Image (cartoon, rainbow, N blue to C red; front, top):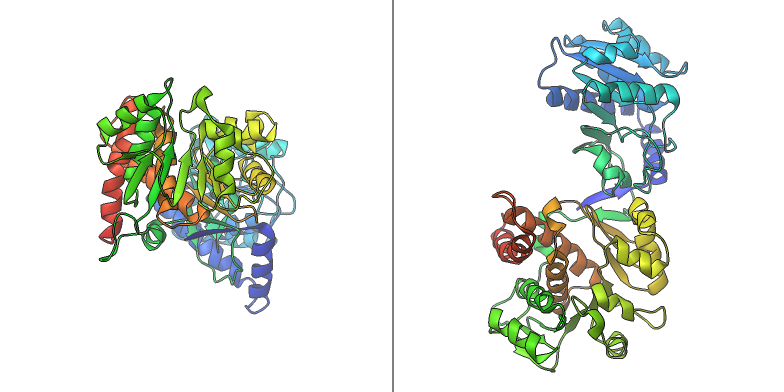
Length: 470
């Protein structure tokens, strides 16, 4: 599991550790890890040209000490001081090692620029001098390595309300921060390299599943399993207007762990579903969970869906099914899977607001409607009513296509029927969905409908890898 902690949690852990260590030890640990990451990034040290953008805090100190270590190995290191309060000991160490103080003009010939402008306590945005230096790097095509996080982003929310650094690599210390996992800030981080420095941290409110976590959570069948014990999913999807949505959602559901899929809907759509998947049972019957909404259009039966929401079985609401959601009742077994536009309509705000503040609005909807929210996007944000969040970061742009959301709804519904709670079903489903899409698109471009169909097909390959321990 990848964990992302808040600024307050990190600062408290750092303070506790520094109280037990000789002065400066923690910064040296960070600087050493940073120097190694920079050298690996540029591929060599001797003769490399490194420009440090140095602010006033410890973040600038990390950059200066890393620069000192690179200078001792033969790099040409230049510090651009963006404050008259640069870390004095770090600056002195750099100068003794052969580094020097320069200006933004030195950026044009650099191999790499190191962003040590502000640390995790900084506010969003960049001051004019810092912004000019960052723009110079962008203008000359010089990659930026960010120290801890790209300066200018909001660390605890992942928001980017104003100008900020766009890093080619971010080197962080002790733990991931929320901005590393949640867009739009995550997109500004580039790959994130974690340097362990020995922090003792509390449980994180934001987490991201890795393959081992998916393997542990996925409800694999046992020797005594049968089609009923593996789970039966009821699917209410598709309409005369959108019959394909039912077929695609069924494909996603059957790629998951269930032993049986029941389809409830118009006869003509049921025929299409069974033509694609003869094993599907059409008609009412006992189920362990419901997936409702994909492609229902004007044929949504709000009263029937609300009856399901008040019953005992977990319910997934997608697309048109979201129109049946209200703020009454106990919905702790309900999972909703909106995209930003659908979540915006639920909350009565503009789509652009949700896209800019994804964590905030996912949590807001989870609390307001007492549901688990899976907010689709380049980084999928999954929020519970109690504020716990999981993020999926392995998505591909090929998922932005018609039908991909229907596959995800079917797959997550299948995981609910297989016994996972809404948070785990959403987390595992989002991971598998994205991993499968990466496999499906590995051969190059595909049409939207091809990608949607291949996602469920490739999910089986992902499951085989997970089941084999790969």
